[in-house]
Amino acid sequence: MSGLGNAAEATAVDDPFAAWRALAQPTEEVEAPTGLAPMRILVAGVGNSLRADDAFGVVVAHRLMEMELPDGVKVIETGIGGIALVQELQEGYDAMVIIDAVDRGRPPGHVMLILLDVPHVDDMEWGQRYDFLADVHLATPERALIMSKALGVLPDNTLMVGCQPVDAETPGIPMSPEVTAACDVAVREILRHLDELTGSAPRKEQ
Image (cartoon, helix red, strand yellow):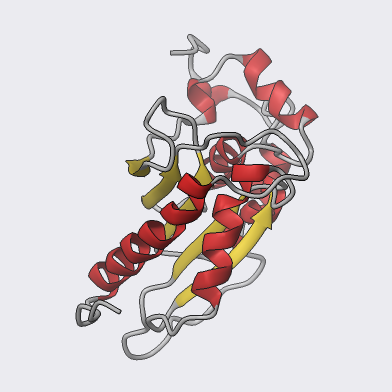
């Protein structure tokens, strides 16, 4: 815990996220739609396609873009600039899937379904809060998610589909065979998850 005292008494001057929160507030009232709208789900592939296995999220997202997906599902590729993810989430989504290469010490190519526990900025030290403002591009998914939560636009239902890389740092080389094969596994798991979220009929194995 941050030990900040009574956070409810903080003023806009004391709150480095005040301007960001203001941007997330609606500027006009929107009439509620009639009838049942499909669940809005964002699938976001993050990573750098020029850095070996860090291309995992980008490659999987591009594959999904070419497929027929349930109504209400939108697939984007944000690269390494987390600010694009924050801006997209301000459109309003009920659930999100993030695809990324993550080092969790697992065997190379291991695909992981990770339920994210994103901290709230009110539980962070002041130095950590201002550090976020210095990173204007929100260069990591973690920072983008924390900012999204601070703005109140992060869906409660957020899942990360991660893959253990062999090498996610070396520029100019292709993905490893292990991570390349893992892309097929990730696509299947994401499609299964989307079908569960939307209540769609299970897909037949290709």
